[in-house]
Length: 206
Image 1 (tube, rainbow, N blue to C red):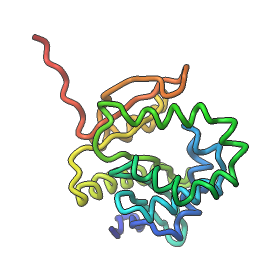
Image 2: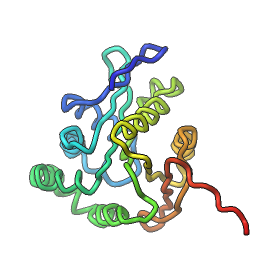
Image 3: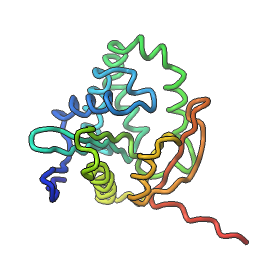
């Protein structure tokens, strides 16, 4: 994937060389979940593994020479996690052991949610945009790019997990055709949503 927008930005498929920029954007802009607290080194390894795993992918938006947004997705999240643990687990744990021990409950809660009945199809794992370019359509460009990519991979459904109070993200996914399928507590006391694409059909009254 490589396309140029009207405002001169470029949406393209990410490579291992983009892992550091994606990790930096993730650490700086994403506060939900436990990954951000594991540190840049862990995140760089994770995004390199995403690029190297056949059923997963990284999308990058560039403005000139600057990376201003990224999105990570996977059509096989369980396979991605297995590959990461087998190939990167020891090194990743060594660099983040203290953080992993402090957040082990959140790790297990996140992994257990993968069995949800409504969380089918490909998963949009993470998306972040540099604040300097917000309002210029980078977020919707990335989410639409995700849908194009999963279509290319013959996936006809997708989902994303988002905090229930993240109004900006919920609105972004809604514009792209996602709809709320489930409310749940991913972590105790913190409500999250599973949003599905295409949006679930509303149940008609009998």
